[in-house]
Length: 199
Image (cartoon, rainbow, N blue to C red; front, side):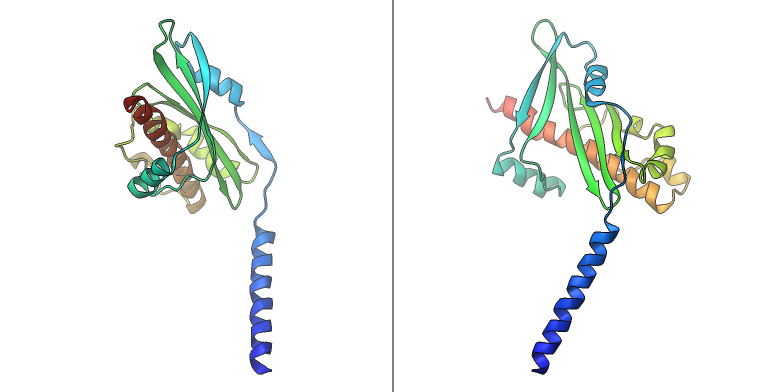
């Protein structure tokens, strides 16, 4: 009887803790800084036309991303907008990635060149709650630090942000933005460039 009572109390305590976590996991209204349409058009550069390519990662590609970079892709499908010049050569690619945090989602658009180097990156959507934490980083043009980086580069917060000793939440969200940009680069490398090479 005593063991049953202890088990019951344990279950109730765990349920209470999970319930509290659900209460604290709240999402405030979204703040859209840039529409997806405007992001794609702005990052297409000198592309004469663009195409949509939906990519479903193979188990092998998922394994590569997990083992080499420690990222486990969660989405079933990733979308790339591929811009081509008049001759049909790839000149740019744009994709969108989202990280769901306790305080709501952060969505980033990333433009890449044909070699998988970052051409542009923008935070396009976040929440009212996260906006004050990310705004100082955006005012300092955080995403420009990653232009020119490819899958071999590191994607940590730059020295200029380390020198100003960011508070914990801006630092945390700066790392989220950096990791989203890196994930876009890795996806392009694994699912677009490597697939083209293996044709």
